[in-house]
Amino acid sequence: MNNYYPNPSTIGPFDEGPTGRSRGVAGLLAIFLGSLGVQYFYLGRTGAGIIAILITALTCGSASILWFIQGILMIVMNEQEFERKFIYTTSSFPLF
Image (cartoon, rainbow, N blue to C red):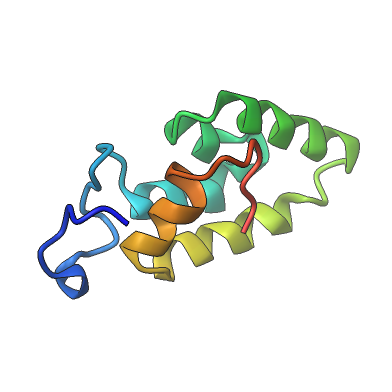
Protein backbone atom coordinates (compact mmCIF):
# COMPACT_ATOMS: atom_id res chain seq x y z
CA MET A 1 0.00 0.00 0.00
CA ASN A 2 1.08 3.55 -0.31
CA ASN A 3 2.17 5.53 2.72
CA TYR A 4 0.60 8.82 1.72
CA TYR A 5 -1.08 9.34 5.09
CA PRO A 6 0.90 9.42 8.34
CA ASN A 7 -2.14 8.42 10.41
CA PRO A 8 -5.01 6.86 8.42
CA SER A 9 -7.47 7.22 11.30
CA THR A 10 -7.36 11.02 10.99
CA ILE A 11 -8.44 11.06 7.35
CA GLY A 12 -12.03 12.18 6.80
CA PRO A 13 -14.22 11.04 3.94
CA PHE A 14 -13.95 14.38 2.16
CA ASP A 15 -10.15 14.70 2.36
CA GLU A 16 -8.33 14.24 -0.92
CA GLY A 17 -6.26 11.14 -1.43
CA PRO A 18 -2.95 10.86 -3.29
CA THR A 19 -4.73 11.06 -6.65
CA GLY A 20 -6.62 14.20 -5.72
CA ARG A 21 -9.91 12.31 -5.45
CA SER A 22 -12.14 12.28 -2.38
CA ARG A 23 -14.02 9.14 -1.37
CA GLY A 24 -16.79 11.31 0.13
CA VAL A 25 -17.36 13.15 -3.14
CA ALA A 26 -17.26 9.86 -5.06
CA GLY A 27 -19.75 8.38 -2.59
CA LEU A 28 -22.16 11.30 -2.90
CA LEU A 29 -21.91 11.17 -6.68
CA ALA A 30 -22.72 7.45 -6.55
CA ILE A 31 -25.71 8.05 -4.27
CA PHE A 32 -27.25 10.90 -6.27
CA LEU A 33 -25.97 10.40 -9.84
CA GLY A 34 -24.79 6.79 -9.81
CA SER A 35 -27.20 5.69 -12.50
CA LEU A 36 -25.32 8.01 -14.87
CA GLY A 37 -21.94 6.55 -13.83
CA VAL A 38 -20.71 9.95 -12.63
CA GLN A 39 -18.72 8.46 -9.74
CA TYR A 40 -16.63 6.46 -12.21
CA PHE A 41 -16.01 9.45 -14.47
CA TYR A 42 -14.91 11.39 -11.35
CA LEU A 43 -12.45 8.60 -10.48
CA GLY A 44 -11.05 8.57 -14.03
CA ARG A 45 -12.65 5.26 -15.04
CA THR A 46 -14.47 6.23 -18.22
CA GLY A 47 -15.13 2.65 -19.31
CA ALA A 48 -16.79 1.82 -16.01
CA GLY A 49 -18.93 4.96 -16.31
CA ILE A 50 -20.18 3.88 -19.72
CA ILE A 51 -20.88 0.36 -18.40
CA ALA A 52 -22.87 1.88 -15.51
CA ILE A 53 -24.99 3.87 -17.96
CA LEU A 54 -25.62 0.76 -20.06
CA ILE A 55 -26.57 -1.33 -17.01
CA THR A 56 -28.98 1.37 -15.86
CA ALA A 57 -30.56 1.56 -19.31
CA LEU A 58 -30.84 -2.22 -19.68
CA THR A 59 -32.46 -2.61 -16.26
CA CYS A 60 -34.79 0.39 -16.79
CA GLY A 61 -33.24 2.14 -13.81
CA SER A 62 -33.73 -0.63 -11.27
CA ALA A 63 -29.94 -1.02 -10.92
CA SER A 64 -29.88 2.40 -9.24
CA ILE A 65 -30.10 0.66 -5.87
CA LEU A 66 -26.62 -0.78 -6.58
CA TRP A 67 -25.14 2.69 -7.03
CA PHE A 68 -26.89 3.90 -3.86
CA ILE A 69 -25.35 1.05 -1.85
CA GLN A 70 -21.98 1.63 -3.50
CA GLY A 71 -22.08 5.30 -2.50
CA ILE A 72 -22.77 4.48 1.14
CA LEU A 73 -19.95 1.92 1.16
CA MET A 74 -17.54 4.43 -0.42
CA ILE A 75 -18.22 6.94 2.34
CA VAL A 76 -17.87 4.53 5.26
CA MET A 77 -14.83 2.53 4.08
CA ASN A 78 -11.36 3.63 5.10
CA GLU A 79 -9.07 5.47 2.70
CA GLN A 80 -6.73 2.54 2.01
CA GLU A 81 -9.62 0.22 1.16
CA PHE A 82 -11.18 2.87 -1.10
CA GLU A 83 -7.91 3.36 -2.97
CA ARG A 84 -7.41 -0.39 -3.33
CA LYS A 85 -10.94 -1.04 -4.61
CA PHE A 86 -11.54 1.99 -6.80
CA ILE A 87 -8.27 3.78 -7.61
CA TYR A 88 -5.47 1.21 -7.93
CA THR A 89 -7.54 -1.78 -9.04
CA THR A 90 -6.91 -3.53 -12.34
CA SER A 91 -10.63 -4.26 -12.67
CA SER A 92 -12.33 -2.37 -15.47
CA PHE A 93 -15.61 -2.18 -13.51
CA PRO A 94 -15.12 -1.98 -9.72
CA LEU A 95 -18.53 -2.31 -8.08
CA PHE A 96 -18.12 -3.05 -4.39
